[in-house]
Amino acid sequence: MDLNHFESERRQQSVRNKTAGSFERFQRARQSLAGGVSSAVRRVANPYPLYFDYGSGSKLVDVDGNSYIDYALAWGPLILGHAPQEIQEVVLAQLRRGLTFGAQHDLEIQVSERLKEIIPCADAVCFANSGTEIVQIALRIARAATGRSTFLKFEGHYHGWDDSVLVSYHPTSQEICTSNGAPVPVGLGQRLHSDVIVVEWNDRAGVEQAFAEHATGISAIICEPLLCNSGCIPPAPGFLEFLREITRQYGALLIFDEVITGFRLHLEGAQGFYGVTPDLATYAKAVAGGAPLSVLAGTSVFMELIASGRAVHAGTMNGNPLCLAAANATLDILSRNDGAVYKELWRRGERLRRGIEHILRSQGHPVVTASGGPVFHISFMAQPATRYRETLLANQRLYSDFVLALLDEGILILPDGRWYLSTAHSDADIEATLAACERAAR
Image (cartoon, rainbow, N blue to C red; front, side, top):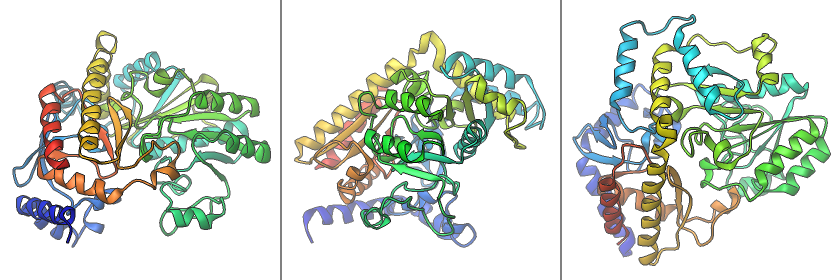
């Protein structure tokens, strides 16, 4: 047994000793809850999924009383941290007035007006509850607007768990080799994906070839403008501008999936950060500070398809007043003083990212960090990735050991390499985290 494996075993046993309550609950949950978790991605936790009691600011406390500085942030939504006071107050006030109405209320107008002011592509918006739902509405509009059934997506990009888009998300090297360029379904029970074209991220030639072969069939290109779900890979210089140009050339829509980047990279999301305006953009996660809300924003010519009823948009819980109250308060905080909170998010995030990079490299580890500030990614690999396939070269086992070691040190991070920052994280949190990384890296 080598020293690294011995240290990993020691850390795992230490975590098990501290989290017996979580282990007991997980064993119990597996008897009634499929897989013991409510979302499949939570099963990959090492040594097992933890159960949490409450969160406050930048901290999360589990059922055994262990406190963690939290950089998972519920997989991204908690841009203001846990249980922010302003959100609590407005949601509680709305709760006293009613959980939901299934009808119109003033918050729908207030929040839609604010979103229209903030988002570059937003002549109008509509609401749903999850990123998966809102992507489906965007693709429906694209089909209705163009009369075409096919859409183009990029390998490694995630657009929700619906059959239509859950394809070529995280294919293995073997699946890529044997697919012969065809879309790779995720899991069992998937339908055929004859209406999906998959191209590698940052591959101009691949996009051009797809349009040359399917010019009259492609309704839209959909992409994460920053590939947060697979390494936080940025667009190559000019690539988003290229997507904007080629979709206009062929009469297709450009859809930005800003479920992660929206209200996190910048107040105006990736649109403001990169200076490229799509036809439609989807939002969820940070838009309501943790409440289940999703948004589609778009230009009037396409959103009119919803307004006229030609493209169906429905849902009992759409525009839920509790979620819109949370969104109204979140947008108020994020937009205050011309978005001043983002300067601090970027400053602290860059201190953390660069500090971790320095610590790991000083210990002899080849490490790459991608993106920055409010969301970044760490990989144990030699060169930055420019497309999904290159992320497969990363040493995932070493990163898993790093996650476990940090968990033992009271730092909670996601298993896939993503780190999220909130406005609640302080300079003291950052320095404490870097000190924990120093101990873990040894």
